[in-house]
Image (cartoon, rainbow, N blue to C red; front, top):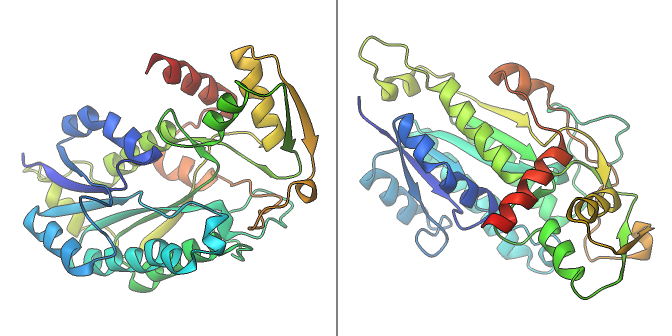
Length: 307
């Protein structure tokens, strides 16, 4: 049985790094992964990306590359749009032409945060910052081109890799005795390792061996010719204040945490006040159980110190 070749972009980021940690599992399922970052493959360069894909016979793309500096995006609009929209459009066009299955990661920030219940995939999008707008434009480009694949919206991603809220809190606690943390922005943290496992699960379901020759590649041709949107985060709901408190309580760090309102900590980019995602669709379609956010946080903190 031949391997299916997978291109994983943004491999030096949080989710890309977690996918790299699953490389042995990919191999067991007959996938061969090509891990690239912006230095190895500039996804804004259409010709270069197409050449790489043709040379390496890529059948699946997992695009974890993104411009994620939410506040800086208000100033670096062209760069944010280039990475989150134009580059994504490139990947979608190539995926459509070459019959490649595209997995793209998007964000809860495509919503305005005015909902009263967890957002479902069909809810109206209305980003309130430029980062969210560029991510939405990336989604819309994929939907317009309509390759085979999935868009996964996620939220508040953290990991033992890269820069994130968990590491920021732990670093601040080394020099601070007191912190002011926003309590009126509500969402759900996502442990990048859990999301990586879900992506692997999606591929396992989509490309399960069904033909007599055990030919995984042939299954791609029989997949529906459309892109689907899914929501994924860990289970539960919290504020950034709750998230910080949990980090310090798990680690036994004695620090005072004060809840403050968003207006008391102004930032260049507005954030949605409520961006909880409804995960019913992804749980149903791929038969997965999603861990509670505190349980995943405990696992991440253990791994953080082990690594």
